[in-house]
Length: 112
Image (tube, rainbow, N blue to C red; front, top):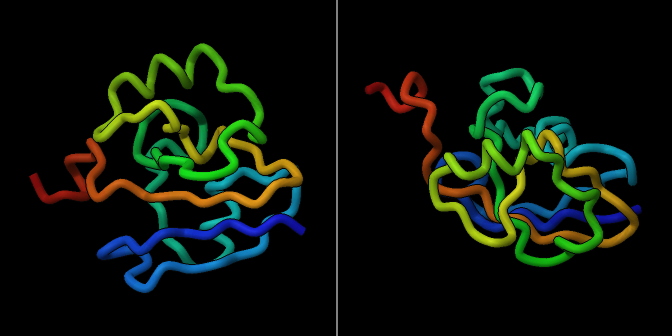
């Protein structure tokens, strides 16, 4: 079963983590099922960017991003070439290394 290495995140996963994720599951669901409480303000409907991750390794093994995801990613904080919305990025048979950006554009969760 593929593994997802989650790089340390100051609030969500301070020590980092290594989790197993079956092929066909979204990165977001895999994180949530392993007690890594990544934001997902739109309830994983591809309508926001709060579940944005940067895939440091294994990016090319993921399913292709759709047009809606690509448009939303343009609004994500800390966008990089290997950025994906974790609710849309489906694990294949390759291990992944992901980074959860420090910030999101979810003002409600940032007490603005």
